[in-house]
Image (cartoon, rainbow, N blue to C red):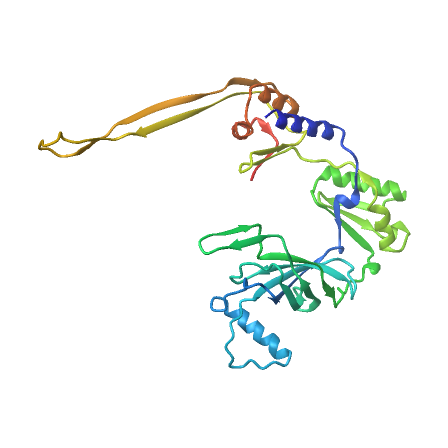
Length: 365
C-alpha cells in the first residue's frame, strides 16, 4: 500500500510540471495512415502438431490447390499429414510503402493445430479491403509459446498457435495517393480537447507568422498548405510535427478490478465527503456426528447434525472525512495513513463517485 501511494504521488509530481509534447505525438495527419492486409495460407514443416484433417477439411483443400499449382496431381488421392496447418496471415501496410519494401506479418492458426513452432509459411498473397493483392508473405514463423505433451499430461506456456515473421512480406503494389498535390491537411487529435486544439493552432500560426491553421472542432485542426508559402506538404508537415505543445487532459480515474490497479490524474478533485469502510464475514460450519448403537444392542445408526454459525467483522477504516476540493496527493496520503489496501480503495472510489463527490471521469475495466 505504501508503494502504491508513493507511485501515485510521484505521478502527481511529474504531472504538476507537464513537459511540452511534439505535435507528431498528439495528432494523426490526414492521409498518413496504414492499411490492413489479410491472407489465407498454409504452414508446413510442423513436428506432428498440425491440423487434424478430419476436423479441418479446409486445410486439405488448400494443400491440394497449392500442390496442383506446382504441377503435382493429387486428384482422388487420400493423404492426411500432421505437419501442415491452415492459418490467417495479417499485416499492416504502412503509409508511403514502396514496391519491394518488406513488412512484418502475424500468423495465426485457424484449425486444431497444437503449435506452429518451427513451421514455414508458404507463399501467401495478402489482400486489402478493395480485394487487390498488395503484398506476398513467406518465411519461417517465430512463435512465442511452448508446449509439451505426454501420455497422461500436457503443458502449454504462452500461445504456440500464433507467431510472427519479421520482414516476412514483400510489398508488390503501392497505394495510389497523391500526397504532394494536397492543398490542405487536417490534424486529428488522438485525444480530442478544445484547449489542446487551440494551443496547436496558436503554435503553428506563430511558427509561420500568419494564419495558416484553424481549429474546426475539439479533435481537428485544419492546415492550409498554400498559405504557408512552402509549396510542398511534406516540407510543411516536417516543420509542423516537431513543434512543442503542452496538452490538456481531462480529470480521469481508471480502475482495473482484476489486478487492483488504480491510475488517477493530477487534476482529480474530491468534494467534502465522509467515508466509512469495513468487512463483514458470515461463516457457517457443518460437523455431523455419526451415532451407533452399542454392541449386541438393537438400534439404527444415525447421523446427528452439528452446525456452528458466526459473524466476524474485520476492522475497517472507521469514519474518515475528506475536505472540500481535496487534491489527489491529499486523498492518497489520507487513505494510506488509514492502512487502506488497493482493492478497498477501489470500493471507496466507487462509492465516492456514486455520491457525486468525485469530480472526474470514472472508468472501470
